[in-house]
Image (cartoon, rainbow, N blue to C red; front, side, top):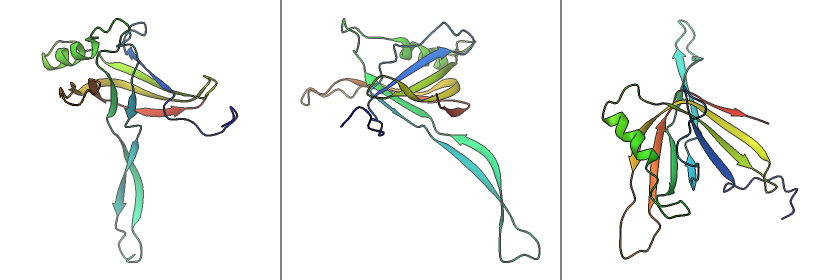
Amino acid sequence: MAESDPLLRAFRFQVQLRRTDDEGTSLGDGAFQECSGLEVEMDVKEYLEGGNNAAVIRQAGRAKYTNLVLKRGMFHSTAGRLNTDLWRWMQDAVGNVRPLARYDGIIEVMSVADEVVATWEFDRGLPARLRGPELNARTGEVAIEELHIAHEGLRLVLP
């Protein structure tokens, strides 16, 4: 396809996790293979109006955000060493280390020309779940770790 193809390829993205209270501190290296959970759901309130049996009045309620799910190869550095940043963050949360670090995130989707064409930002992320690789000597699959991040807001920011 031509470079001017208007369709975006889902594999061209990058993730940045920056500490909420210190913009210079990042978590991991952003080399994630998968990102899902870019989702917002509106809680719709229904009201029954007296005397009006033909309709239900609906009003906007609170927004609900799905956890973001990030997956990456566990041994992803050029030296083939384990990056333990995500595990330390989760262990701090579980071990009641306070104050617990929260991370804001940026997910950028890029065109084939490496231009950022869409950006999602989320606020005050916490580790909700961290899953290590499934180990099976018979398959030869890559060791994948999976991080679920609960956050307090998601928005699409166009360039």
